[in-house]
Length: 220
Image 1 (cartoon, rainbow, N blue to C red):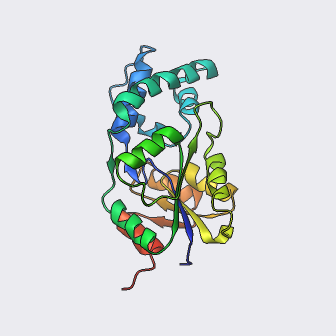
Image 2 (cartoon, helix red, strand yellow):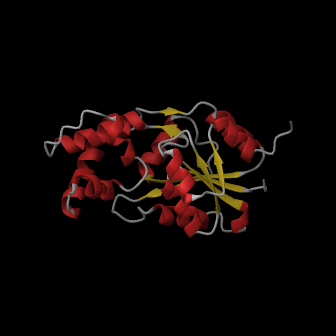
Protein backbone atom coordinates (compact mmCIF):
# COMPACT_ATOMS: atom_id res chain seq x y z
CA UNK A 1 0.00 0.00 0.00
CA UNK A 2 1.56 3.28 -1.04
CA UNK A 3 1.30 6.54 0.85
CA UNK A 4 -1.19 9.19 -0.27
CA UNK A 5 -0.91 12.84 0.69
CA UNK A 6 -4.29 14.03 -0.64
CA UNK A 7 -7.51 12.05 -0.39
CA UNK A 8 -10.76 12.83 -2.22
CA UNK A 9 -13.97 11.48 -0.70
CA UNK A 10 -17.30 10.97 -2.37
CA UNK A 11 -20.13 12.03 -0.08
CA UNK A 12 -23.34 9.97 -0.46
CA UNK A 13 -22.60 6.32 0.27
CA UNK A 14 -19.04 7.02 1.38
CA UNK A 15 -19.11 9.62 4.16
CA UNK A 16 -22.85 9.96 4.66
CA UNK A 17 -25.74 7.49 4.53
CA UNK A 18 -28.25 9.79 2.87
CA UNK A 19 -30.58 7.22 1.37
CA UNK A 20 -33.73 8.32 3.25
CA UNK A 21 -33.54 11.99 2.32
CA UNK A 22 -32.43 11.32 -1.24
CA UNK A 23 -34.92 8.60 -2.09
CA UNK A 24 -37.86 10.45 -0.54
CA UNK A 25 -36.98 13.50 -2.62
CA UNK A 26 -36.89 11.34 -5.75
CA UNK A 27 -40.19 9.74 -4.74
CA UNK A 28 -41.68 13.22 -4.35
CA UNK A 29 -40.45 14.30 -7.79
CA UNK A 30 -41.84 11.17 -9.47
CA UNK A 31 -45.23 11.70 -7.83
CA UNK A 32 -45.51 14.98 -9.74
CA UNK A 33 -45.80 12.80 -12.86
CA UNK A 34 -48.26 10.34 -11.30
CA UNK A 35 -45.53 7.77 -10.81
CA UNK A 36 -46.22 6.06 -7.50
CA UNK A 37 -42.96 4.43 -6.46
CA UNK A 38 -43.66 2.98 -3.04
CA UNK A 39 -40.32 1.24 -2.56
CA UNK A 40 -37.52 3.58 -1.51
CA UNK A 41 -35.12 0.66 -1.98
CA UNK A 42 -35.86 0.71 -5.71
CA UNK A 43 -34.73 4.33 -5.84
CA UNK A 44 -31.28 3.81 -4.31
CA UNK A 45 -29.85 3.27 -7.78
CA UNK A 46 -30.42 6.99 -8.36
CA UNK A 47 -27.87 7.92 -5.69
CA UNK A 48 -24.52 8.64 -7.29
CA UNK A 49 -25.03 9.40 -11.00
CA UNK A 50 -26.55 12.60 -12.35
CA UNK A 51 -30.25 12.51 -11.48
CA UNK A 52 -31.52 13.77 -14.81
CA UNK A 53 -29.67 10.97 -16.63
CA UNK A 54 -31.19 8.34 -14.34
CA UNK A 55 -34.69 9.72 -14.94
CA UNK A 56 -34.10 9.39 -18.67
CA UNK A 57 -32.68 5.88 -18.26
CA UNK A 58 -35.19 4.37 -15.85
CA UNK A 59 -38.40 6.29 -16.61
CA UNK A 60 -37.88 7.31 -20.24
CA UNK A 61 -38.18 11.04 -19.47
CA UNK A 62 -37.03 13.34 -22.24
CA UNK A 63 -34.30 15.80 -21.26
CA UNK A 64 -36.66 18.73 -20.66
CA UNK A 65 -38.93 16.66 -18.42
CA UNK A 66 -35.95 15.20 -16.59
CA UNK A 67 -34.57 18.62 -15.70
CA UNK A 68 -38.03 19.74 -14.61
CA UNK A 69 -38.17 16.72 -12.29
CA UNK A 70 -34.77 17.69 -10.89
CA UNK A 71 -36.32 20.99 -9.78
CA UNK A 72 -39.07 19.08 -7.95
CA UNK A 73 -36.39 16.94 -6.33
CA UNK A 74 -34.59 20.06 -5.11
CA UNK A 75 -37.86 21.53 -3.85
CA UNK A 76 -38.25 18.62 -1.41
CA UNK A 77 -34.60 17.92 -0.74
CA UNK A 78 -33.56 21.46 0.18
CA UNK A 79 -36.27 21.69 2.85
CA UNK A 80 -36.92 18.17 4.12
CA UNK A 81 -34.37 15.74 2.76
CA UNK A 82 -30.99 17.38 3.11
CA UNK A 83 -30.35 16.44 6.75
CA UNK A 84 -32.30 13.16 6.70
CA UNK A 85 -28.99 11.32 6.81
CA UNK A 86 -26.29 10.10 9.14
CA UNK A 87 -22.53 9.84 9.11
CA UNK A 88 -21.36 6.25 8.72
CA UNK A 89 -20.01 4.76 11.91
CA UNK A 90 -16.25 5.22 12.13
CA UNK A 91 -16.02 8.08 9.63
CA UNK A 92 -15.40 10.78 12.26
CA UNK A 93 -12.57 8.71 13.71
CA UNK A 94 -11.10 8.00 10.28
CA UNK A 95 -11.11 11.66 9.28
CA UNK A 96 -9.61 12.69 12.62
CA UNK A 97 -6.71 10.29 12.14
CA UNK A 98 -6.07 11.39 8.57
CA UNK A 99 -6.30 15.04 9.55
CA UNK A 100 -3.84 14.58 12.41
CA UNK A 101 -1.43 12.87 10.02
CA UNK A 102 -1.45 15.95 7.82
CA UNK A 103 -3.40 14.49 4.90
CA UNK A 104 -5.11 16.99 2.63
CA UNK A 105 -8.78 15.94 2.60
CA UNK A 106 -11.33 17.04 0.02
CA UNK A 107 -14.93 16.18 -0.82
CA UNK A 108 -15.64 15.37 -4.48
CA UNK A 109 -19.36 14.87 -4.98
CA UNK A 110 -21.91 15.13 -7.77
CA UNK A 111 -24.23 16.77 -5.24
CA UNK A 112 -24.62 20.53 -5.63
CA UNK A 113 -21.82 22.33 -3.80
CA UNK A 114 -24.18 24.38 -1.63
CA UNK A 115 -25.95 21.24 -0.38
CA UNK A 116 -22.65 19.47 0.22
CA UNK A 117 -21.20 22.34 2.23
CA UNK A 118 -24.33 22.59 4.36
CA UNK A 119 -24.23 18.86 5.10
CA UNK A 120 -20.53 18.90 5.96
CA UNK A 121 -21.16 21.78 8.38
CA UNK A 122 -24.28 20.18 9.88
CA UNK A 123 -22.51 16.94 10.71
CA UNK A 124 -19.41 18.77 12.05
CA UNK A 125 -17.07 17.41 9.39
CA UNK A 126 -15.96 20.83 8.14
CA UNK A 127 -12.80 20.98 10.28
CA UNK A 128 -11.34 18.05 8.37
CA UNK A 129 -11.89 19.18 4.81
CA UNK A 130 -9.67 21.58 2.92
CA UNK A 131 -12.16 21.94 0.08
CA UNK A 132 -15.62 20.79 -1.02
CA UNK A 133 -15.98 20.23 -4.77
CA UNK A 134 -19.48 19.65 -6.07
CA UNK A 135 -21.69 20.34 -9.05
CA UNK A 136 -23.35 23.63 -9.96
CA UNK A 137 -27.04 24.50 -9.94
CA UNK A 138 -26.70 25.83 -13.51
CA UNK A 139 -26.17 22.27 -14.85
CA UNK A 140 -22.42 22.62 -15.20
CA UNK A 141 -19.76 20.39 -13.65
CA UNK A 142 -22.21 17.56 -13.02
CA UNK A 143 -20.15 14.68 -14.43
CA UNK A 144 -18.09 13.01 -11.70
CA UNK A 145 -14.90 13.16 -13.74
CA UNK A 146 -15.36 16.93 -14.06
CA UNK A 147 -15.92 17.25 -10.31
CA UNK A 148 -12.75 15.28 -9.59
CA UNK A 149 -10.82 17.36 -12.11
CA UNK A 150 -12.00 20.51 -10.32
CA UNK A 151 -11.02 19.08 -6.92
CA UNK A 152 -7.56 18.20 -8.24
CA UNK A 153 -7.00 21.83 -9.19
CA UNK A 154 -7.16 22.63 -5.49
CA UNK A 155 -4.29 20.23 -4.76
CA UNK A 156 -2.26 20.82 -7.91
CA UNK A 157 0.93 20.99 -5.85
CA UNK A 158 0.62 17.25 -5.22
CA UNK A 159 1.80 14.67 -7.72
CA UNK A 160 -1.17 12.69 -9.14
CA UNK A 161 0.37 9.47 -7.84
CA UNK A 162 0.01 10.88 -4.30
CA UNK A 163 -3.74 11.48 -4.67
CA UNK A 164 -6.54 8.91 -4.32
CA UNK A 165 -10.32 8.99 -4.80
CA UNK A 166 -12.61 7.09 -2.39
CA UNK A 167 -16.16 6.23 -3.47
CA UNK A 168 -18.93 3.65 -3.51
CA UNK A 169 -20.14 3.79 -7.13
CA UNK A 170 -18.56 3.09 -10.50
CA UNK A 171 -18.81 6.78 -11.36
CA UNK A 172 -16.24 7.56 -8.66
CA UNK A 173 -13.83 4.95 -9.98
CA UNK A 174 -14.26 5.89 -13.64
CA UNK A 175 -13.86 9.56 -12.72
CA UNK A 176 -10.61 8.76 -10.93
CA UNK A 177 -9.31 6.76 -13.88
CA UNK A 178 -10.20 9.57 -16.28
CA UNK A 179 -8.09 11.88 -14.14
CA UNK A 180 -5.18 9.40 -13.85
CA UNK A 181 -5.37 8.95 -10.09
CA UNK A 182 -5.80 5.84 -7.94
CA UNK A 183 -9.13 4.85 -6.43
CA UNK A 184 -10.68 2.96 -3.54
CA UNK A 185 -14.07 1.29 -4.01
CA UNK A 186 -15.98 0.91 -0.74
CA UNK A 187 -18.51 -1.87 -0.25
CA UNK A 188 -20.70 -0.34 2.45
CA UNK A 189 -22.42 2.27 0.26
CA UNK A 190 -24.94 2.03 -2.58
CA UNK A 191 -22.92 0.31 -5.28
CA UNK A 192 -23.17 -3.46 -5.58
CA UNK A 193 -20.18 -5.76 -5.16
CA UNK A 194 -20.43 -6.65 -8.86
CA UNK A 195 -20.46 -2.98 -9.88
CA UNK A 196 -17.28 -2.24 -7.97
CA UNK A 197 -15.48 -5.42 -9.06
CA UNK A 198 -16.29 -4.90 -12.74
CA UNK A 199 -14.90 -1.36 -12.78
CA UNK A 200 -11.68 -2.56 -11.10
CA UNK A 201 -10.60 0.17 -8.64
CA UNK A 202 -7.02 0.27 -7.39
CA UNK A 203 -8.24 -1.04 -4.01
CA UNK A 204 -11.49 -2.46 -2.64
CA UNK A 205 -12.60 -2.39 1.00
CA UNK A 206 -15.77 -3.61 2.66
CA UNK A 207 -15.98 -1.51 5.82
CA UNK A 208 -14.94 1.85 7.22
CA UNK A 209 -12.54 -0.04 9.48
CA UNK A 210 -10.89 -1.57 6.41
CA UNK A 211 -10.69 1.87 4.83
CA UNK A 212 -8.91 3.20 7.91
CA UNK A 213 -6.36 0.39 7.76
CA UNK A 214 -5.76 1.16 4.10
CA UNK A 215 -5.38 4.93 4.30
CA UNK A 216 -3.93 5.62 7.73
CA UNK A 217 -0.28 5.40 8.56
CA UNK A 218 -1.12 3.68 11.81
CA UNK A 219 1.13 1.67 14.06
CA UNK A 220 0.01 -1.85 14.87
